[in-house]
Length: 107
Image (cartoon, rainbow, N blue to C red; front, top):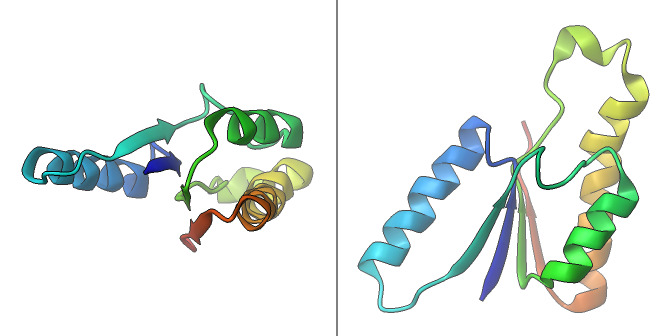
């Protein structure tokens, strides 16, 4: 199973890394998990996200990412919307089209 976890540098992303590392160490089945952070994909860019999803072809997408800089969000409205609303929509559309699963965590 191919799993993509977005938000690898945040608290939730690091928790998922620990969880999946533990599963892979103690389980007979090894999961193929790719952790995605800002350096791997610009969630503010729909085309960047589409490209990553189409290249990776995940069976499960976990979105643990969010724009959380509250003080800056009012001045970066477009970026905030792109990351917190548009990116999860793109992930969900991909999952629906490819019969993958999508799990979004609300912050």
